[in-house]
Image (cartoon, rainbow, N blue to C red):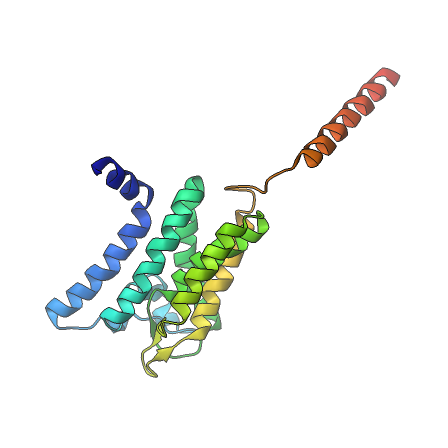
Length: 217
């Protein structure tokens, strides 16, 4: 049991650390009876541009926090297990790129929450699953995103107190870019016997051509 738990923690260290961090931030707000909404992101605001790094860690309340935590654990676990060698890079790029894209695409309202990261991770698994012809990964990602969308919580626009669909879109775009960037990494599409035979036949032809070319020289 302890070995299994240790293995899970090792595999999912980054997603678990991220979720721990966002819960720690909310705990600090509750204990200190203060708010860290000043670290929200404001698109096109040069004064708030560094808040790209901070706004995913701040949440409106425990419900908002909880509903962003479980998709990160699930999707982060999928990526950590299936895309082992690139999982940390995928998570880091999802965290940074979703915020950067939203800074360019969003409106001028202050925004907090980690749903952009959730949609980036989900989009990565979904698109990567299609690119690599891994339908199970694609369907699993779609299910997680579907459930997260219908919990009616997401990235919160502080002034309007509603979901920022632009931030979700920004996360989805980030995941798409990351999936294309790492299209040659992770599990690849299965090759059937006839495809392998075609590759071997092509290799034999290439060898014959090279042999004839060298012989003529």
